Image (cartoon, rainbow, N blue to C red; front, side, top):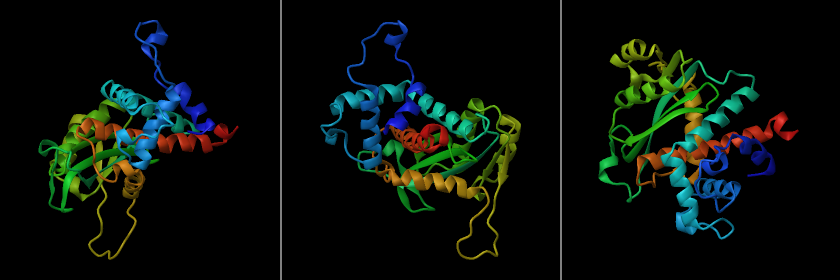
Length: 263
């Protein structure tokens, strides 16, 4: 991280328990060095044991990653960054609209058969990332499943989580894969309007569809993080944490480039 990024990220970090007087062993390494190490791994796609010597030892970095993953601290840090980005753009911290979609990616050999499957539509053997983003393209929720899990089945669980976390949501845009009983279910269970953005049958070639391009742009950002170009994680929770870490890269850069960040 640059000094500008660190100045934006430092006040938003979760405070360790030992600094609050709740006991525990103090951290042995600076949080900035640990965050830089994880961000380097996500951005460059290296193995944990291939961590450069400029960073703390790989096992200490991995322990920090696991602790933040198991205690949902990475999601807490990510959500604070998202709220900061929205405020900097004169938006309310809680969004009222979002977009849902999924992305199938190939899985590495370390991914077990219990969390991988074959997506017949994309002809991909691996996992599927289900995401909900706001109108700025910032992540609201993510769920990683086997690639053979249907979009509507996963959307019921994901939209339930997102609706509980973001009470101001009113409308979610989706593609034709989310039609059917899911529309009525979202309206009855979550008070969410699921609006289907369909591609016209008369359209030929590439056409930018309203609202759907927002989530496609997020998928493009994720694929630029080499650790996410293929699913290398044994656990789906680790795969979801990697996506959150990738989004922190994007948001800290946006905050550092904003007028207040440059000042």
